[in-house]
Amino acid sequence: MSAPLTRIDPLMHATQSPASPLCAESHALPAENLLARFDRFGPRYTSYPTADRFVEAFDGRALHTAIEDRRDSWSARPVALYVHIPFCESLCYYCACNKIVTKHKERATPYLDSLFREVELWRERIGERARAGQLHLGGGTPTYLDDSQLALLIERLSSAFEFTPHAERAIEVDPRTVDRARLERLRRLGFNRISFGVQDLDPAVQEAVHRVQSEAEIAELMRAARDLRFDSINIDLIYGLPRQTPAGFARTIERIIALRPDRVALYAYAHMPQRFKPQRRIHESELPPAAHRVTMLAQAIAAFSTGGYDYVGMDHFALPQDALARAKRQGLLTRDFQGYTANPECDLIALGVSAISKLGAIYSQNHRDIEGYQEALKTGNLPVMRGIVLSRDDLVRRSIIMALMCQGEVSFESIEQAHLVDFRKAFASELQELAPFEAENLIRIEPDYLRVTELGWFFVRAIAMVFDRYVRTSVAMSPRARLI
Ligand code: SF4
Image (cartoon, rainbow, N blue to C red; front, side, top):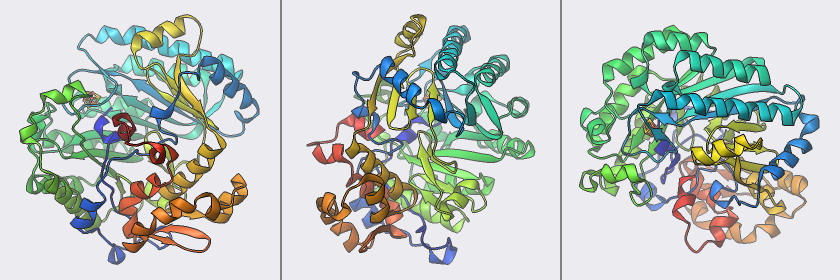
């Protein structure tokens, strides 16, 4: 994965209220003291409940039942596909991803064999060639695979799934593993969206995190991606890394804006060396103090805003003409395991070690270790490690949290009709707990609606957390919960 830590962001960012049209003059940017006050760890809500709530009682049989239950809908609506390639050639010290760092490229071959077996098993279980409207290759480093391996992967996926004519095909790219010629070949393989993991352009920071890539090389890759007409180019950045300073990071942001990526994901680094071994190589004395982190975030938000970018939602900025910004304006944003998307909500079939699928009211996660993943497949079973069947309470809270995160508003009536609850009665305590947010003009509690204000978009995660039953019932959120 280009920017794995990016799955962790204790801070919230800014955006426009979906109720008001995007307009540069009307941007409300949060003061540093507000950012500091609401700076808290929390889930990214790429799923609800978050993966740390999945249970091992959910096994392959439970997934099989869920697949059976969807039997009539496979042809009705295209699914999304995610493929996890866990290998990387070198270790980035901030990494919190599920990856295998090895220069032994031959290790990819048996992994791909297992992956192809998993594809076949899904095809057999579904019983037909389901349509696929999206493909996302993540990791690890998908470009660890060579061209022929990637071509074979696409071929196997295409024989099991029928890609729709305008299917979105995205790939995460480590800039150190590609050049213009390689990008051309990726384009020929059908990839139309690309995401570069940049993190920071400052050589001192790159050295401190063991991920050195020159600005000139990144600029050349950006030019090549433009020439090759990728539909959307994303750049991932991280703030809070060792040796970062507000001045240095401001320079990085300025140069990134000059490169004009269609989208930017800006994430916060969370230093948890007890949990993530690679981070033990980071010198704590080199980490920026909390006040500098807040300054870097505030500066970045202001720079992207004046640089012509719309704030899409937690972590994401996009040029106004990009599909993500358009979806935001139209109230059509959705969320999946890659973050915000402009695609309609759909089932997700996720393949590979640790990948998480979503089918209606269930989530199912594959084994997180490669051995367990491969062993399960040898027995002819889908390699399920854990998962969850959502309860009625989970479903209503998922609807509320996703509506807040994606549309910035919750209609009490639509929740009441869909879930047969009396909103004000069922969520009386949550509405009370929103009072401090209302006092700071981050949310408006209206007779029939909750509406996140323009300023409140910076804190939408904290607002959503008020409705998370698992956070509410935990004395303290587990470290794991903070990462998902
Ligand atoms: S080690 Fe691999 S997965 Fe981790 S950040 Fe680096 S490239 Fe991404």
